[in-house]
Amino acid sequence: MKICIYPGSFDPITYGHIDIIERASKIADKLIVAVLNNFDKSSLFTVEERLEMIRESIKKYDNIEVESFEGLLVDYAKSKGARIIIRGLRAVTDFEYELQMAQTNRELYSDIDTMFLLTNLKYSYLSSSVVKQVASYEGDISKFVTPYVAEKLKGKFNRYNV
Ligand code: PNS
Image (tube, rainbow, N blue to C red; front, top):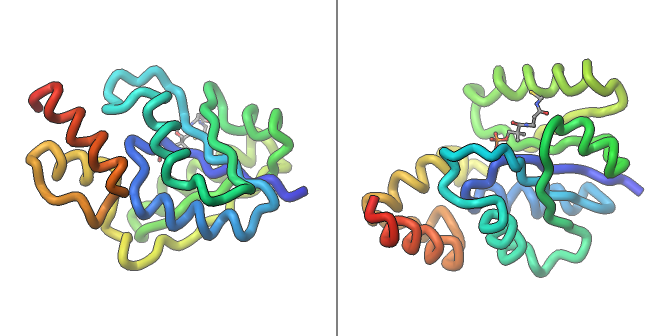
């Protein structure tokens, strides 16, 4: 069985992520969307909130699992029997960071490969950071995230009055 892992921060999940997840789920027998639990206080959403938003976004797919992980991605991949990491590439500016990560992961675990999927052009400008910024100024984020995630973002910025 071809098990692939799509790791990330997903703070929060955007339509760009969903597009990659949908396409990766057609390549993998089983796709694991893995949220890094780095106890990073700068994340807007808790890991549980991020997992819930992802699960809500992909519930129609039956070969996708959503989990969190801690520590090294390659150790998590090994524990899951996965040998393919999926990452999205939006633009050439992503490449250097992605190359560094992919090469490091292969040095750490020679059986792992990283497969890059080109982000759909219509989402090539999109990032979770940009979405959070627009949401914080009460801008229209309906083209960036699902209505469910948009509500969660509104709740965050209302509650903390950012
Ligand atoms: O969505 P992001 O923030 O670009 O995802 C980055 C992520 C989670 C894939 C990356 O930070 C990661 O794999 N972290 C786990 C620690 C690790 O394995 N580091 C070694 C590879 S550089």
